[in-house]
Amino acid sequence: MTRLVAKSWTLLLLGCLLQFASQVTLAQNGPQKIGLDLYACISTNDASANSTFLVGKDAILLVDSGLNTTEAEKCLTQIQSISKLPIRYVVNTHYHLDHQGGNKLYTPMADIISTVWTRQKTIEMLKSVPPHFPSSVVPATITFDRFLTIHLEPYTAEVVSASPAHTLGDAYVYFPEQRAIATGDLFLNGSCPAMDQGSVKNWIATLNSFLDQPVETFVPGHFSVGSRSDVVFFRDYLVDLTAQVSALAAAGDSIDQVKKEVKAGRFSRLRQYAKYDATIPDNAASIYDQLRHPIQ
Ligand SMILES: [Zn+2]
Image (cartoon, rainbow, N blue to C red; front, top):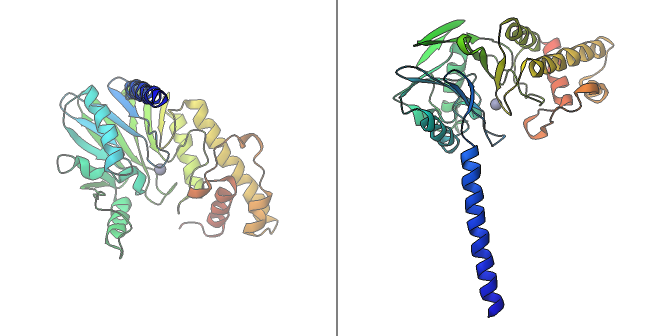
């Protein structure tokens, strides 16, 4: 009996400590300030993308909405801890579910913005039988071809197409006043990327164009906020792997041989995610395929 009572007290104490710990964690899990009125919600779930939000004078712009409503609500809580202004714009950097599965939480108050291709692909995924996307995905209400400037006074946000790269319909958002870019999955900090149908050549050119701008802070699609040197490392990985695959393919290697023969070298510290086809051999296979079937 005594032991039972002692055990109950221990459990109660443990429960209190856990509750305290979770409150401390919650407090620490606020948005990360990355510039004047610009913040990042860094996802604690690898399966859900990071979000970035800019607080203007009258409204808020959000980049990417996360995997689903649950993940989106986590970011909304963080946004509302900073500002109760309405969220007027949600930019989706590409069509993948982890970047636009939370759109519904923000509509119809917010306009959803994407490239034309991303909107078409999203509708296709929603209408397929069975649907590939849940109804929490809302396709764009505003699309653009190459470039869109949003004047969220007193700031501007430049939404730029970088297609094709990670997918056939990528976009990123440049915040000139904050010297920051929300990159979507065009940049992952310390990780191999997943490669959809796209173009590694244009992807590298896009990363170079990031570095041509006076930008200091990069909110990646996943993982922690990056610096210029983090983007350089990621760009160099794609350059190195493309050179290796090109040489092996030119020597007549098959895709399976290429996957086995590519060397990680100094890029071995990149995270490998086999479940998302995001490993060095997976990336090598995608590049091999792109070299053989370049996008016209
Ligand atoms: Zn992603």
